[in-house]
Amino acid sequence: MKEQNHSNHARYVPLHHFVTPILILILLIMGVMRLCCGSCPMGGCQAGQQCGMMGMHEGLFEIIIALVLASLWWYLRRFAIKAQDRAIHAEENFRHFILTGKPLDPKLSWGQVIALRFASDEEYIQLADRAVKENMKPADIKKAVKNWRADHHRA
Image 1 (cartoon, rainbow, N blue to C red):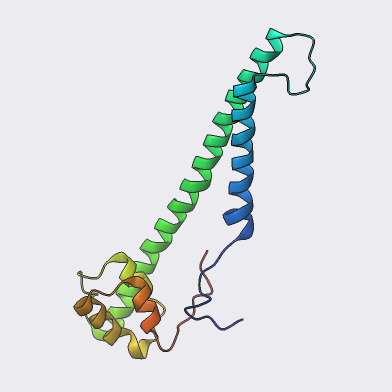
Image 2: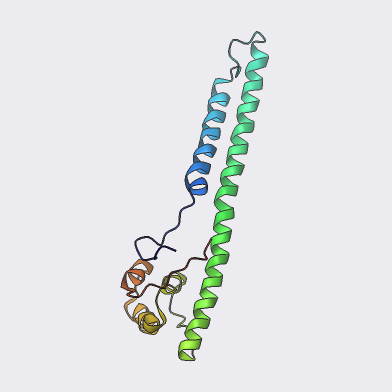
């Protein structure tokens, strides 16, 4: 596997991060256009007003579907990330206990603990103490890691 470090540790899944939201946005725009115009999607309809109302209903339906899909797209990922963060927090607390015989300092934020997971065992304890004393931001903790401990098993 490719060596992981601070500059390349972020993971993007193109279909999830880029394609899906664009498709949802297109569906939403199509629904708004159909709702506003209320015209026949086929163009040149002979039914007149009845087709206009049908287009408006279809537009409203497309908007509702787009909003439901956007909600699912956002919250399913958020729920997975929250579960992953809880697992990382528990793992790092256990790792700290193994290395020191004490649990992590409760002053460490969740973001700080999650950033510490990339530190090697040799620098972990010092970096955890430094993070508390200096109230380091997670990004600064990651930048301070000298011997990167890669995480290739994340979602």
